[in-house]
Image (tube, rainbow, N blue to C red; front, side, top):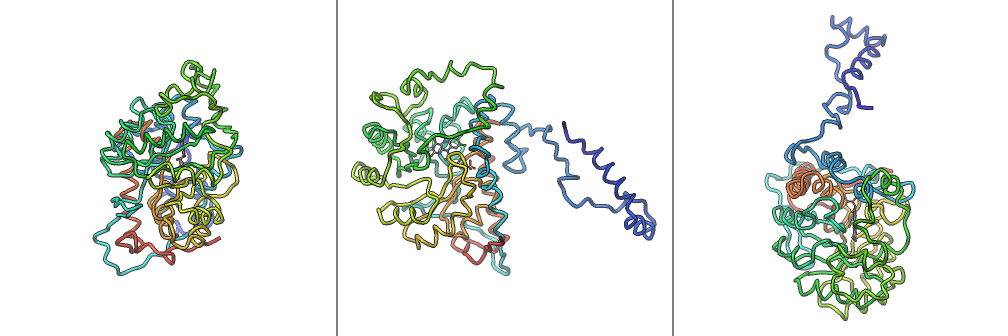
Length: 417
Ligand SMILES: Cc1cc2nc3c(=O)[nH]c(=O)nc-3n(C[C@H](O)[C@H](O)[C@H](O)COP(=O)(O)O)c2cc1C
């Protein structure tokens, strides 16, 4: 049922007018109960009607404004695939709620008239620490898919990590981005497939290979499963599930490879030996995506891995209930600056990013928000999502008194629970 703001306001005023406390104050002021009353929470009085969808990307006030528009535009099964967590979606909620446990401690009388948000990652300077996380099959959200995202990344000059499950080949996406990407690797159960993809990414000029290590088993994506039956289309028309090879028809990076013997796109058998083998197969930097425990972070640094991404895959790989902002401090402490630590999962606000950077992250990746932008308005939607995040980050840095990323230090953030 749509939220009737006028009715709710009337009800609230009726309640206030019945209050003896207010009656006496109002009588003293010689006013009726309506005058001078400010409802305590903008959620009650601001014109926030989710049925009034934004009409264009520039209308968006924050990244959340794109989600309901994307929900209208994207077929229900694809939307469900994007939105879904696992089981009870405890981790999905934890990823957002985790930020509430940390408060910022702003510093004053620091010149923040100019803010420099640039960071250096694996030897390359980027104007912001906001990175585009790998998301597979982006044409299922908009016909221009990864190319629209690459052009938006170019407009805002963001590092883009391209998924193994991309609909468009790494060469074309690199050309659209106009700068080197990082390539995310799902290793599969077959070394030759992984090796060929890595070689292709290297030839396309990718700087790093981000090996995803958190998709090692099955997953119960209940939101997806509940939305599939509401999608009137025939899924089998596009997803030919006869074999993994036919199912991969729309996944550009599998084209031309010998897929015989391929039983899984992920790799549940992967161990540290795989990383050693990978090191010998490429000159690119190696990043591990999906670290959540300090023990694994130290093993990664010991193994000569170039960087890690603290990630629970946007709550899409397990329902542990642990947010990444909760996991980050123990990992930063254990790694002691030996390798850069990136983080993702649940980042939606400039203050979220500032909290992670204060806690010791070098950069932050975002997933769903730019997919909401893509699904809502294509490239302009992604551009606006990234712009909003940059604007919020800039403002948040000014608010805490940090003219550069290096000024975001641990004592600017305090854990409260
Ligand atoms: C629809 C969707 C598809 C994804 N596909 C991949 C993928 O192919 N490879 C990968 O490593 N991570 C994938 N991820 C995870 C993201 O890289 C990232 O970890 C996550 O989205 C961050 O959380 P957020 O969505 O809350 O920002 C995907 C996420 C979504 C939402």
